[in-house]
Image (tube, rainbow, N blue to C red; front, side, top):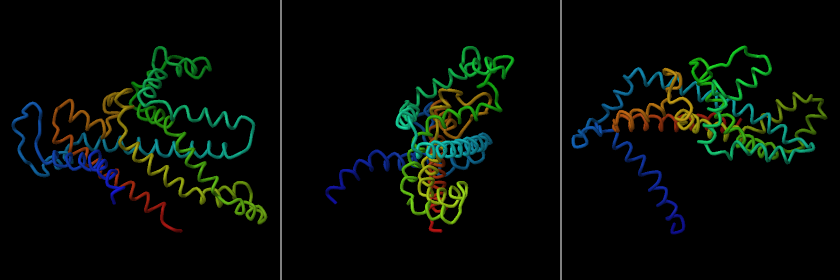
Length: 281
């Protein structure tokens, strides 16, 4: 207990206390434009949030973004994990290159993709124009129908390498005897993939889905750098609503309530994924 005590003390300071204080703040009507009057309102802030139409818009945007990011990351990571699991010249170099997006700071990642999508000088417009796929430069981040997916694409590029490594490590742990037995039984490559590889990757997918869900549902930096919630409300997510309520409107009570709701939603989704993918078959 003495050896664990320092770690528990650090966790209490950096994790437990902020959560408790955030919940405490959410029970008061704290507005910094009138800092000396902060009455206790109980769960009124939560009721106001649930009655706010913008909150449900933010929930829908966050749900779409999370699904696209998590599924896209997992699918692309599976492709790279399968590729790196094979022996071929240059595999080590590819492994190093694969780590570059993950090693890129989040701020740099957001700025890089913002420049790629730039309507005047962006490389995406230049590439598509050279290939003859577009006849004029597109306003990528000004299109409400595409913006959320484009931000998700930037997130997938950043998060995919770590997910690929997790799946690759899990894939290496699958016994070769299972593949040999399936081959002897006449199973095709596709059948071995579906009945040996995919079930063997269950624990890896569990880690990927839980981690990526926690990251995606709380994502803020890409929205702050690339879109700032726009155009219109196309990328108005829950995390961006927390920021606008807290630091633009200075309503710390309401902002803390939304933050606590988001935390509980993240915990509930993670728990559901663990129960769904972690149970014995």
